[in-house]
Image 1 (cartoon, rainbow, N blue to C red):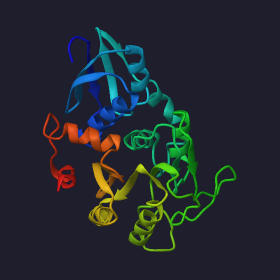
Image 2: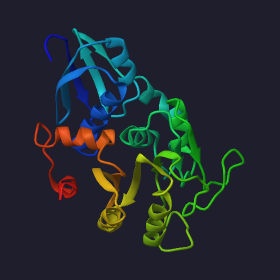
Image 3: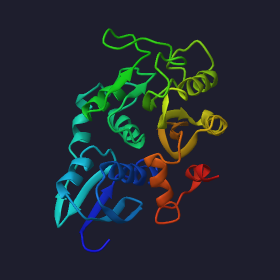
Image 4: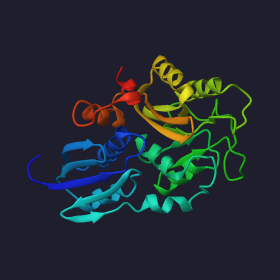
Length: 273
């Protein structure tokens, strides 16, 4: 790309290099903006923009892991991420709004529908609503939300663009079956509900990670992103992104990043097998 405006981005160092780069690349790709020479590394990214700077800044406002954008010497900080703690309570063991925003962005969802079959406090649907995304939450005992079986959600085939969810992960949450069975039953139930280019972005405890990845491959889902969240002590959870198609914007973005600037190490490299 000749000419254009040089854009420099400072990224949050949260849950590994790959997640921040993938979120940024996915949002830029979804925006339809003319971008070239995209490079991304540990805590930074840069690219050339050929058109509307204001449109770019609007896209960056919904990013979870962007600290700052510099264009023509002017610094811009995303605003939505600072407003999110007011959406739901943060003093609980449930998913925090920052992670919810990140997971929604990684799913590549545009307008929806988005389904969260383990809504809990409704963090994911509420954050999605702030982005103008049509979101449905269930499996929560709240008069404003639907109540359903998360392993058999009442949705039509090929009707959901993204499933973004945080299933139960330890004994803090009481469920009537083994967690491994709950997770696998959930995955099996939502494959048919996803559109052809739909995606699943979910949290999973570290002790179920290998099982989820193996079963996802067996079900025809493509893992395209992985990031670790150290909760406390020995407890770690992973954000796992799965797609039905290699044409998903997250998959396309990751393919363009691998072998370029982003180097995958440790658990992140597992997705390259």
